[in-house]
Length: 64
Image 1: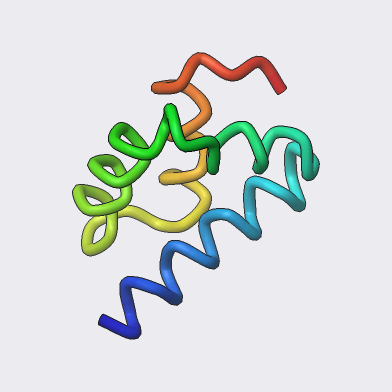
Image 2 (image 1 turned 135 degrees about the vertical axis):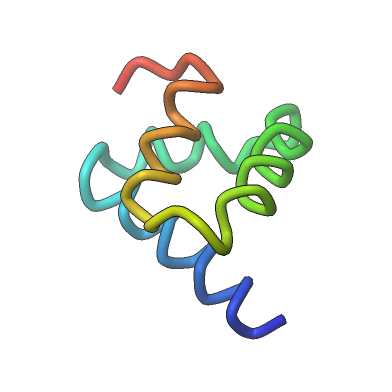
């Protein structure tokens, strides 16, 4: 469980550092929670935080 929380935090930190705080806030909106949760669960074991962050932005169609 701790690994999952660390991974999620790492992904959001990557998005905030690379694309800015505004983009990170868009990802954490309640309306996006279902998609974000699904992507984070699928990506937790096989993808890096950077790839997962980029995947989140692409799947949510956020224009950074």
